[in-house]
Length: 408
Image (tube, rainbow, N blue to C red):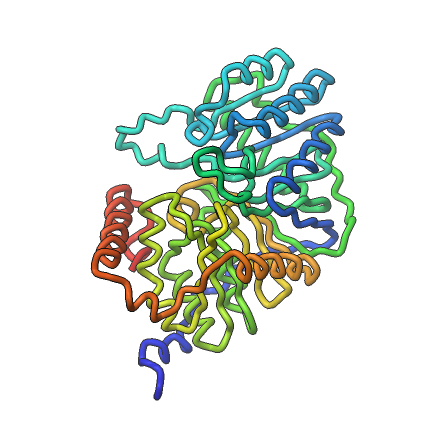
């Protein structure tokens, strides 16, 4: 039986014009697994800092991890390190006043990105949050990924298994871009909030000498010159995939071009595997994503839902050679609104380590979604999916983000 005409057409679907993705060699990149791996190294680097610390995060919870990071930053500031902590005004709105007082007394600087939330406001700019997780220390080492400042363990009553996430530790020439991104956003926020003593450009000398074999590219998403850089880096890699695409992403509701790129890859024989969140976290996004399951499965893609606990990963591996880890989900919030940061690495060792770990989670902690399962869904579940999908489309239309075709 020949495949449906829609799938035959996908084989000849024309990708958007290729975007040049700048890569540079000479990097040492280490993949970090979950917070237990990440925080041990982060705290050690903060303790060794001698000049400057930029730390950006979306969530900064009042838990034991938050206390340890605040304590380390406080100690660093007291020994003369310029500590510049920037946290999101919505995600970290419950940042403890006692911590603010301690940091200020130690001489550390703290900024809330867009602290004026006003939930009933119709100003769509309030949706533009600082979602990236980026730390740059002494212009020497950086951390980028999806891990917020919070414990791996979900608090009671959930008590889910350790949070599933990744980060990269990076050294090498890209520190210039990573440091510039952190410094630029810090100075912009300080200027907007009239903190005139804090707007001076960082003069810390950067350590940019080649120190490893990894080829890498650093990309941010903002609302000025870099609106689509992360999405374009993904599309460029998907376009050139020949064997396999593995994506682990907690919130997956990509736009028209991204979905068609994946389906076109599957149509030309590339194995496409999606590992998505199985727990209901953001209700609308969770169920709206399922509106695409049938088309994905008909295209030959494999879909798995993570069941062991709370999945927060935003990672991908292509052809065992290309890998990315970062803060960007593949949904309207990350691709159209938030400030994000991802590292893209072309290195077989890093890619294989990430692919192996994603594969382990698929094999041990996930369930496969079959076409039969989707077809057997009852009317109530199907109705819920399409109501949530319609609600997401309505919200996007109301805010004006995404353009006419994003969710078509």
